[in-house]
Image (cartoon, rainbow, N blue to C red; front, side, top):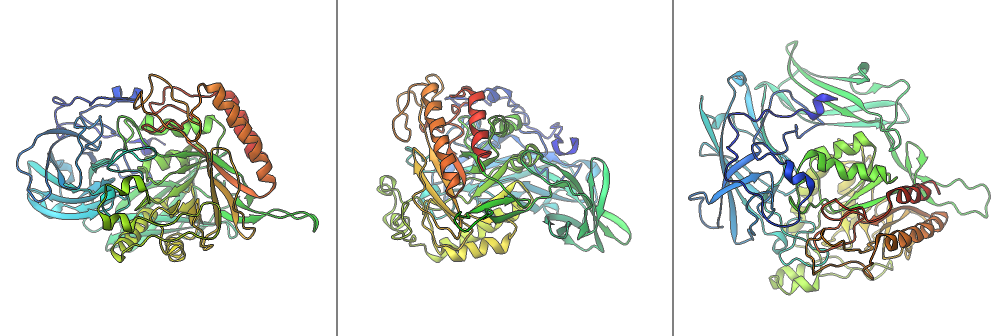
Length: 614
């Protein structure tokens, strides 16, 4: 599938590499492979590929100015798409809510694109982005996790250099926007703030007549048919859809009947190629190539051979009861923070999950670039996708916040009971923005079939109006399960009741009418000298251990407990976590991905034994 790893030839429009030096601190092996002339050169949107494009990653001029002031003069250069606080940006400076981060660079539009519209695409910018091209304001976007685009054709000069300028402002945990684990005063499980462009920026030409914006494939297992809902802009007569498998066309149109369908599972991640062509007056005006997978997710009950045997609710994949087991994945990097240094690095963690025998990942209150989900589709890993939280009810950091913000982020989390939990006092502005961003995230990600569960809330952080949020989630995508409140508080509006228990696994909450899962456990801390964010400040759940052998012994003991829980209704489990993150040393791997703390062969055998216990 070469077209899905298409890379850009970053030539004359890329900035010179001089002037960039990565910042200090712990780094991964891939940091040395970052090419400052064009980092992350791969085509960033593998689910919808066009052949003509230009990557605008590289060195941009930047300035950090008081929020009320204009750009002025550049202070230096920043390596896009790494956030200003990261080492790989070459800046490694805190921005904060009192300031704005400005970017500027020039590019040229190829002559071969003449007569076509030009789109300026951003993978993600945290949080509010305002964009000008040649001094013309082309638009703004709020939301740190969803892609967005502007048609910049009216602002372009007829030839020569074009200039793009971006202003970014981000309040982090001092505001109301979703921000996940970012926090101004870092400690424990809360990490460095991320400001600015953190995913690929690129331009591409499209027809001025019409072009595809997105599509949503939905597999109907009962009818053995695939429907593809195409969203496009402009005027066209037909959206022609062709599906192929291993080079041969197997279906066309929507819906299309699929004979002898090859279903996607973690063990056999079957992939179908997809081509969408917009037709106007008998001629193609736009064509995108992508892919999809055929799979269904459902609630299944255990068979009940006699009245004395309990029947529990399970997660069904393609009509088969499946125990999903895997790590909590924060998606952080010591050198790039939110952004992996290279595509190989992005793929590495997913490959390790497969090597270790797991079949799922819980993407924890962060959203990844499209290529991460692409690799999960291709390699065969089920994903539980969290919504980044808007609050954290942390008494330690609320002491530093504006009192009104602190009040709105304070509520009661009831982790071991169905009673006593309370919502956050969330103003309507917060709610409206939450729905806007969660809707954009779902709409951007539902094309990836690896995602099997949506998780709107975690541990009551910013939780509000849970039944309404579940209904909203289902309106945007009804093909996945909804884990309404990982760790509580429960409203019994979704499909799953999710318990958290550290360090050893325990199922302190159980409701037979729902799927019951252990959404977090483990967190066995083991700091490995020489591979730490801070050598003298490390944190783990429970007692910090002194060797990998100790970690595995407890991990295996916990696995035996899980097998018992599976027999009494536990339908899935998530271990904290795949890597250390900053001072949190709960990872299977160190933060730099250099040390696996357990024997990998034994780890795989243990994980497979848990999955097969169902």
